[in-house]
Structure formats: C-alpha cells, structure tokens
Image 1 (spheres, rainbow, N blue to C red):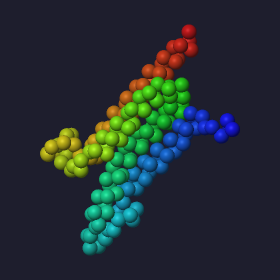
Image 2: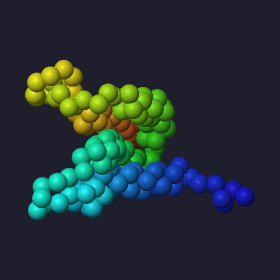
Image 3: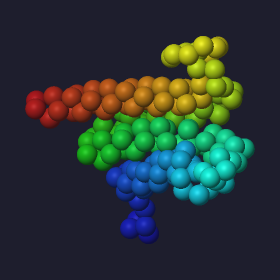
Image 4: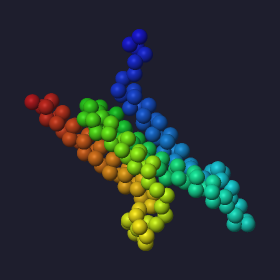
Length: 154
C-alpha cells in the first residue's frame, strides 16, 4: 500500500510537467492565429478578433504564471530540503496570485508601466505577479538552503 504513495519529489516532478504543459498551452493560446485556433486570412486582411481575445485572455495569464511556477519547481527538485520552507509561502501565495489574476478587470489602458490611461494592462499584471512570485520563492528557497547548509556544517 505504501508503494502507491507519491513522494514530495514525485509530486514536484508532476507539478513541473503540468506547469511546462500549462506554459506551452498559454504560448499556443497567445499565438492562436499562427497555430490555427482562430480564423485569419492574410490575403483579405480579415481576422476573428473575438476568438483571438478569448484565447489571449487565457494565454496571457497561463504563460507567465506557469513559467514562474515551473522555474520554482525545477529549483526545488534540485534543492529538495528547501521545500518545507517554500511550501509555507506557496500555500497562501499561489491562491492569492490566482485570485488577483481572476479579478483583474479587462484593461488595455497600459497606464502602469508606460502608456496612457489608468491602471496596468492584464498582461502587465500577469507578468509582474509572476515575477514577484518567482523572486520571493527564490529568496525563500535560497534562505532555507543557506540555513540548511550552515546547520549541516556544524
């Protein structure tokens, strides 16, 4: 019965694979015309913009979010002793980040980091949220690794 139970490392590998797949799906959704998901005719210059908007709204959040998660999980696979410390952060950070991504109103104003208008675009929120998540995760992992290294030396 115990042989069926997955280890933390196996869970991280599954999470890494799913994150990479999610980032890949996000990339395809972001480039939906190139992959034939939405109609585009270059001769007549016609496009299905509602289809494009639908896939972009999903792809814009998946690509940076899943890429950041995949990078963190890869680091954790290499430094598994840091997992308990990171998990304490992740159990609240991942749901909060996902919630922010979900409630982000549709915006193309671009007033936050260049452009005119009020507030950031969705893509800016997704990218900055993912960057902040990755940086905080990397700092937590580095701190846990450093503490573990010092305790092993003593």
